[in-house]
Length: 232
Image: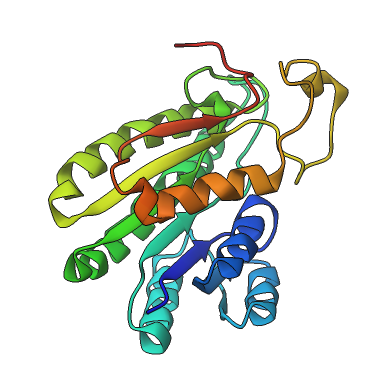
């Protein structure tokens, strides 16, 4: 029986690359995105596509139900995200911070709340969240991402401990600068490996965390950043 991987906010970039990669490894693929590009990609992969927002609970519920109707299970959930507000930390308005929390933290909490009972029935599941290198070393270029993904790191620890008994794992991947975005010299010079990471390099980590080979890994924040962060 093929495993089923559900991708949220994954019409482009890292999420889309990972969906293509897992499809090549034999996974059944379902993709949700707000742009409609996820639906197009899923069609190319003979999977299930859905156009909706991870900021809307009803969209996520409908997406998961369609996956269950077609495949009967969800083995892996990959949560990606769009881009939250940027700017000087004291110039960002309350609503900017609230939007950042929605985009970078509640997106995962919301989807996890809905998928967990399904995975509990299966006695198996892996949730993988695409986070950021700035989780533990905040970056002024990405203020709302830095703040709320630090919160996501804590949430993943709490979740992993609580649901380990159900054989459900949660891990965060902390990418550095990846080639799905335009290269900038100011960022490139900060990277010890002197290059942007490849989407394919993130995809292989996602594959490992999704597979039986990663079955003893949970509650972790895994840096895949070319050495850009320095903390131990």
